[in-house]
Image (tube, rainbow, N blue to C red; front, side, top):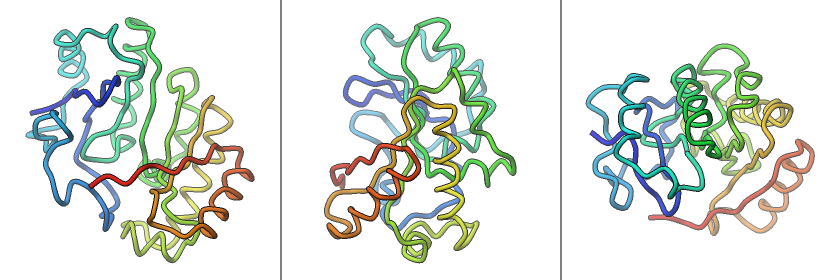
Length: 200
């Protein structure tokens, strides 16, 4: 099974297949891999020791970032994520990023943002849309309609502990007016707004 995989000049960590969302646009509904990753469906959730062992197979000098992102929501395993982030920073002095749906506080039933301090350099959060009803339609979150507000709150709190908080939407999926609304949300929170290219 694939635990670590390359995308461009970054190394990605596939921690879990668990996710509180079932997004209508999720790539894992139509594929089992990313580029040359091999299947990202896990036979079991890898232990900290298994993940650390996998680093031996990679030349870490090649990579700009270690990114926690696979076929699942990485904050579902926040404790392991933070252990691996600490290991990677101590051993390889590498930048770290979490690609997340921003529902980590709901998943863990506590505010996890302070625990990211000093270990995570960037949090990239899928904003998707400026509208909470549309957000729920798209993500089909198990936490219901309040998921949007929880995601915004997570982003706001993360800006206190993480140097670079980015909120993203996908190009061509929302209107220019909606993109402007997303920019306003990010400005109010203190996050950067990024429009990602469409991937199919």
